[in-house]
Amino acid sequence: MNQEDQAVIPSLNFFHETAMSIAWRAYIAKGLGDVEKSKILYAEALPWETRAADLVKDHHNMEPTRSVLYRSAASMAMNCGKYDEAERLIKIALEGTPPPEIKWELRDLRREIRKKRKEEVWQR
Image 1 (cartoon, helix red, strand yellow):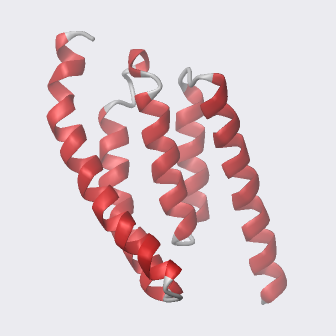
Image 2: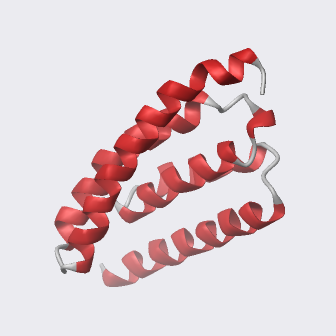
């Protein structure tokens, strides 16, 4: 890891830890049946995780951290119904060099998003 990579770590950790703290509350709310509160909290966590991921967007040598952060942000976007944003984040993650396992998880997440879009269309 070079000095430029090391310089982003403190901010990355702050943004990621903030996002995960909020996302944990969203996960609990969903588990308790409060889907609307869960969506609100995931929407609140999303910009924090996106900021963390964007800090390493061009740091392709920081895989798998880079792709894992984008996968996490995409999951948060999906969980609050921001499907376009989720797909955008997945695309960025796949532009890097994610390990095969993460690549498959990103593709699975994309399929899940597309399935949710179809379900919402049918519910209207």
